[in-house]
Image (cartoon, rainbow over all chains, first blue to last red; front, side, top):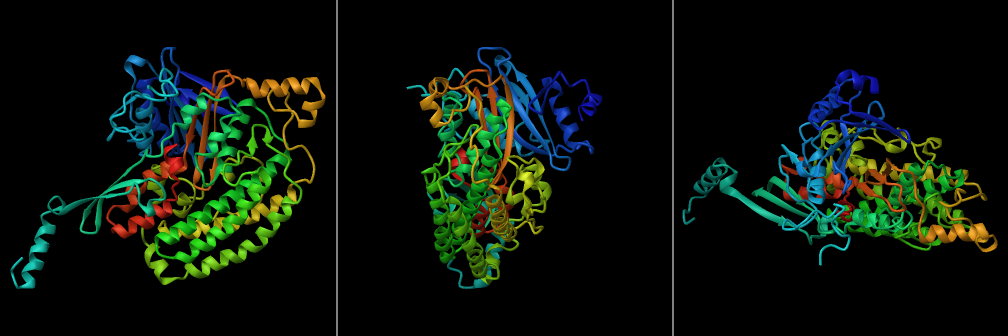
Length: 147
Length: 410
């Protein structure tokens, strides 16, 4: 399965195996093409995006990691794609053209981490009020909030 | 208006429709305090007469920052927060979180604990589906099913209370096993409820399945094609009602589900009625699983894995041995530190694929916990099958989506 992945492109920066899960680190510029390939390739059919979430590695740089949990219902496979983003350029291409379900997931990630998704049809806050200041799930945001 | 000829009126009305929605459009705010939104969901509807042109669910009214709070707690402390995500299926959340942390630690728990977990989560599924059936039926005007459904659910709640000490916020599953040894005679109580339940399900089906009003309100309403469902990430009974037989229990078995025999009910009609049929069939399948689990659970044996320093020792050992005392003290004061890494564990909650993504940085507190809440994702598909329908159908559609706002907003 990973062989196919490498055959496709040199879009694989790193592969991590942990507890039976495969994580593929993808450079940002290759992400959309990789996603399209994985969703469309008949022998893989990762047509289901289970989850999309971010991790803040503050104060490390690149600060943000965005994780895409893919699922192939037909082949019973799971795969995690990971993209790293630096804090001064926290922009990644939206996955809504490939998996429409990414819409709300990306809104949530934008809402709580402040990561921008270029090409997203409707990028606005989803859980927090529209006039909220700051991004609560960032590590430099206090758990108690600002008083 | 003062034209006495009704034909002209009709003409004017047709002209207005032809002018397009912009001329005739009305915006209706539904919720957040609306009895049929099952919590604090707000939907902004754009209407042309009674036809929905656009629906925009607004969520976040119940956002409590559970994921952020988890980062400030130790791995064990965070279990109590998971109860509060999906308050109709707390044990499913407990299970998802505990399995994720156990995967992170790389441990396998005793078979006895696994079977008890299966048994209790299936009871949770039954209880959750009963609440869904009752509230959905009351939305559509069938009062009695609501009362019956809650009557049976109460019996299951009593089992939870007997076993864990709590009706709803059980926190009964712990990392490495269970919180307590189940009390004596608990299986007899489960058996009693399971013996009476199939007859009650028949009662509900008598009331609804062939009820003409019920069929008129649900059949052909809220159709979600399988391709759309997959593209929108819909999971659980909603996906199976669209003809996709994907169930995490079967596709990626956890907690010994591969040792149980059960069917995955599917329907192909993809409408509200199909979702009703799937959920009722699921209750019956869950009863089958509970029955099998009752046979499998050994009367005696460990209910917790033994892993000094990570899983608390038995109470007796804590009181009699110095190592036990030290481990107990350390676990409850500073917690334990799993290895660095990240895991994603999915389970089949009553509402669909509940995923728990845990990132560890090697400290006793989770670096990041993300709950992939099935209601959140399923709710996203609401506009897809509501647009073009009548307002009254919106109520039926929200009902069959089976959302729990605690889980949507977290």
